[in-house]
Length: 478
Image 1 (cartoon, one colour):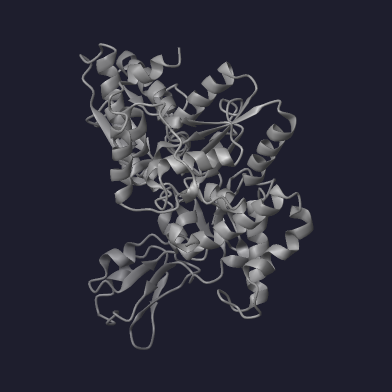
Image 2 (cartoon, one colour; image 1 turned 45 degrees about the horizontal axis):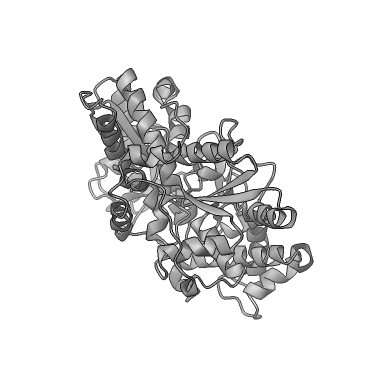
């Protein structure tokens, strides 16, 4: 049954490592059992995934390190397991069998680096030591015989942060100065050679200390996208399951989204042009790629940071853990502006591992209630939801005379186009809703399952609170 909870076997393998690490952590036997975990996951003597069982276990040992927090000297939450990154062909432009050895030699003429020569059959050959991957030869070939074979991780990274290491490993290399921790490479790598650091041990430690000392309470703030996950159970059972883990209270991040929409609408009406601040990967992208436009980023904290701030201010003994689909949140909670309010972050993948590490079958639980936010706060989970919420917030504040022209950006490529147009002052819009993941948060790397149905589930979940306005949702906090 466990395998059916995930999109791929790579996710399932990652989950098994997290589950076993968590299980030993609950029992205070992690260090004692550390070297048993790879053998437990790959119990036989025959390899099932790699060339030999010994390599499989060596890679599992690296996965365990990342499950325990990863490299403390690497500030990025996205890490490469070099030993696991060995099956992809070398990336770059290659001449295929479609090359006819034509007389025109347009590919040679257009290459400014002299990287193209011809063999005894007059077929083109690319000298990798000279090629700069400009792609000019591929564009002019009349047969389309020159193709660019990018590795899945490189293809998935829309900010150009991934390249091939120059050492003998030829493993993927991440440029932290460009990476926005969106996790697209984590989800797309077919060998699971790129992973996000896990803070699951921090969460277990918080829960255990809260139960032992009774000096603080651990709050779980859950992303609205949870409504389309854990499809084998009911949402109310998931909420009860979270409390069974030891969390004191479960709060919707969507309530923070209501608060942000209300404030962001007023800020937009005042300034006339604004970029959203809800997606940490998008905000990081602007600061790294479009620093001249950073002044237009909304001054509001993200929804989870906003509601977490409220929790800390009203419950001084609270510790807050965010649970959602986002790997970039693992970077956000370390920011100076956010770390006073959020104590740790885990993904839905990690939440499933926590359930199973304590043998909690959520399908057998009674349904809890999660009813804090409005329809508009809940639909932040999908692209366009924030824009709808801002439009509603303008109306509720009597600011609907402001001519909102929202530009929802569905993924980094769309975000880039919008920012370039804004830079050139040709953008037909005054509010850019930026979401790094395609589809919005419902496309996050930390999901159990991805798919079109997720948008419908989020909208359905939102309609269950449709009787509430944004103002109603916020009023309950006063």
